[in-house]
Structure formats: structure tokens, C-alpha cells
Length: 92
Image 1 (cartoon, rainbow, N blue to C red):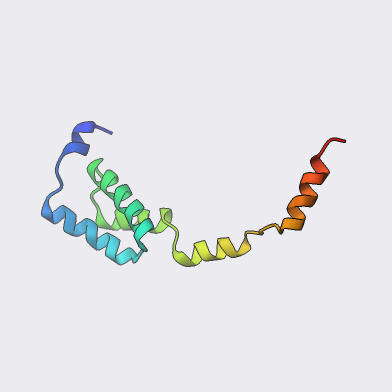
Image 2: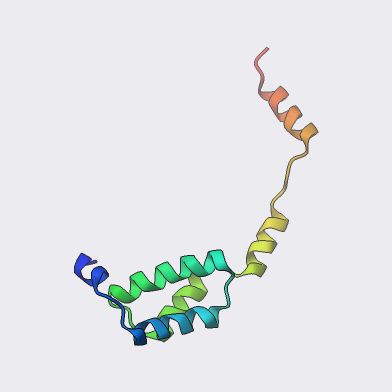
């Protein structure tokens, strides 16, 4: 990736296209910011197709439902389970 390409200013038309991709993705602020950084870097490095950039966002940035499901599956240990685990690893 050339630093020359990364320092080239984006035109208003470029920004409108990139914003459209982000609007279509309908991400919340944190993931939207990550997606913006990603597609700007890709655009500046030569990937200028809105279709390709949109696909990258869909594949690389998880949706809210995916994150909620992953959090639901994540098992949180109770205080008693944590104490039991510490006791099992203590050398007597």
C-alpha cells in the first residue's frame, strides 16, 4: 500500500459514495466508525467499487444480532464457581 495513495484527498463524490455504503450497512456508531476506517483505507488503496466495498463491510463488521447472540452464548461464572476454580489450582 503506497503512502502516496493514502494521502490523496477524497473528492466530494468519493465521500458521498462511501457514506452511502455506510448508510446502507445501518451500523451503530462504534461499528460504523470501524467500517468507515476500513472502507476509506481500501478505497485509497485501489478498491473503488461500491459493490465490493459494501460486501467487505457485510463480511467483516458483525451486525447487532450476531453480537447479541455471541454474548448470550458466553457463559459467565458465578462467584462460587470462581472460588472453586481458584481452590482447585492452589498448591497445598
